[in-house]
Length: 195
View (tube, rainbow, N blue to C red):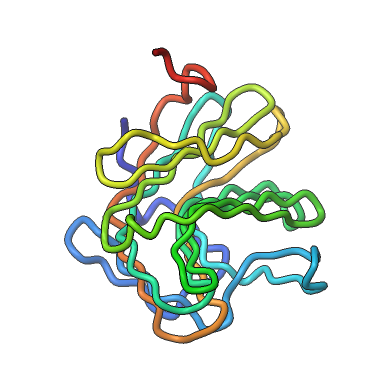
């Protein structure tokens, strides 16, 4: 496990404010920021705040943050980017009054999945994206509880991928996310844990 320095990444779009706080990073999102392509809504948003660094095949990225959302579509987690039309975001999003764990996988058009995790509010959430072969495996956990499988999605083995923490605030100003760590680890050994 290797900590990635906050200074190593490059922002896709500059946040409203970025403040180091000890080993953590406080990121304030711009109002209206989001990442989405076409499906159901008919619009394209590509103004997310994602701090990205190269992610070679055979590695995984873990991003941890404190879950403290209150407005519709507040969101944070991990973002993987190939190009403008090929990217993945996974994390927690505040949707219809509840914090939910989910992912958006985009290949030209976005899809979206969510599952409520209201018991995670106020705690440290970690999202892991593990790149192996022709797939990325997305997992999540709160504090030091067991990992939950979120999604398995195709990802071109030869693609140049960047990845790291992200946040968005589609419906308001003033969302500040406290990111507590960004790490590179070995890719998961298998899709299913040994029992």
